[in-house]
Image (tube, rainbow, N blue to C red; front, side, top):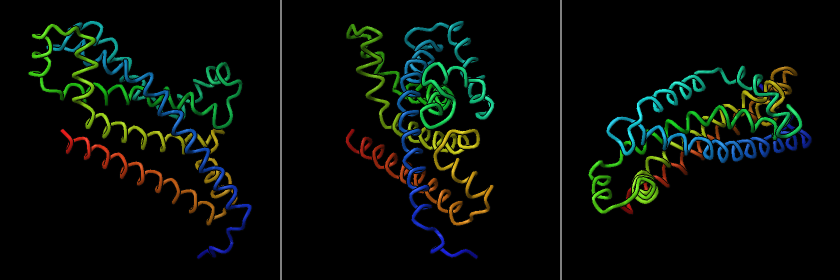
Length: 224
């Protein structure tokens, strides 16, 4: 057993700082993965068979690239992207450096989420927009994306949870955050209270993300 009183003020400060680093990594990585994954997901959707702009060759190539990146183990991917992190942020260690591989790792997952959500849009709505003379870009922006908002919200929620898990793994190789504290202080120094505190905070972030994402998606569905 352990004594909760053993978690002294310095440890509270340590875990609190790590929690903020995890939030920063997750927020930054979510933003950049959306910037990368959204256009890629849209292209994957509209170039598929029976969609707005069927381009089987392009769709097949992009699909293979996305699948390859999704199947890459995150730890190995993070090591491979170290040179890119050094170019962008000037270092391979810390929260800012971890955002680069986190974004690259999450972007393919986000792209598939976007693709799946857009494919759920009623084909009748697309045909009606075409009949009214809308361009492909207008259909994407004014029909497909708005109609898919509940599914997109639910999917992005899963992506954020995925990124939280990745951020914990990033701590194993100098990424900072709760994963780093759990490994360096909790595991390597056998500090059970700190380890449990880090794990509980990670679980809390996952639960609050899922709760908020589900609530927002449900509200969107009700307002239809």
